[in-house]
Length: 429
Figure 1 (cartoon, rainbow, N blue to C red):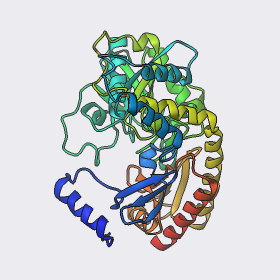
Figure 2 (cartoon, one colour; figure 1 turned 30 degrees about the vertical axis):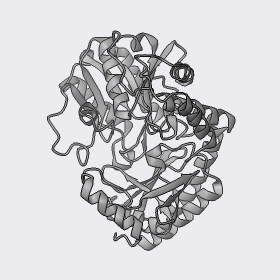
Figure 3 (cartoon, helix red, strand yellow; figure 1 turned 30 degrees about the horizontal axis):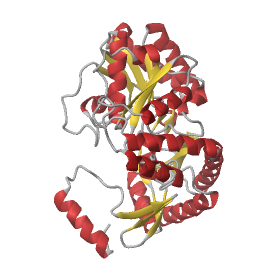
Figure 4 (cartoon, rainbow, N blue to C red; figure 1 turned 135 degrees about the vertical axis):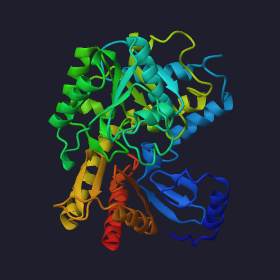
């Protein structure tokens, strides 16, 4: 789409000249400011934000409680490196997350900077604890852009390109995808087949999964599937790692998506919404596993930065004081109601799926053949942007439109955004 706004046009020319093309943009607009569930670009246009920085802004842009906490920390100090001279914010946030993570057993928390770092360190911890080398992930999964993250990611297009060779001892089992014919039973049979033909389960340190596949298209793993996987991993001494980087912090109406199933993972990775946009990630899990690496084996120069920890503590205060999980559940009910109504109107919406307010719609050319319709998804993004609504795609075929609106958005804002989505979809067809 051609840009017509002069400041956006000028900045886009700079972007094309000085930034590698591999850093893709969903929308060619440059943001000047943001508040709550709204963004304004450099030319003053306003947008409802249904992307949330890819699920980072669950408490909304510029939440006063977060800004106040970061400003107060900024005036004290910005960095010492926790491995050099520790500070209170790190250990206070570690304590609170250990109590919030599933499981009635002692837990410890490690902070890092990015989601990919959290995933890689979870694997390091699992290998150190079990003494085993192999890791199993699922197809359609996304676990980061680093070498091990790419190796674990179960999607070749975009993410893997010509970046190999990849890390060894990484295996993929099929993810359930009921809409496209992969049932829970078939996925579990595929996991059994993997253990029979490719890797002995006694050599597997960890099985990592997203309770709701994020980049894979917002495919929720059923409670029955998750319980079966939990039983299988326990039987073989394999650590179960829940990747909650996109699905955590209230995105599904619970603090962690895996809580809907009652399954307790051994380790849990988090990032994105933990610090309302400041770079922070981590791993929380069984204390004995977390303690397996020897001193010096974990950490990072910026890991658990003081500003990010201050933001993380404020985010947890917002969840508690504003009843954000209750608000998330109400938001989810409204999103499901409206999107299912859209499905009744537009047969090109093959399926509405997700968990709570982590919801998406898969677009198809024909609901009978279920042929993916990525061109419609792209047109919808463009038409919605013209109407002041920012959306994101997902899915193996690029034909899934996902909703990651801040959980603090009012129901009126959500209704307004969904109205724009409906009009944009009608125009895109």
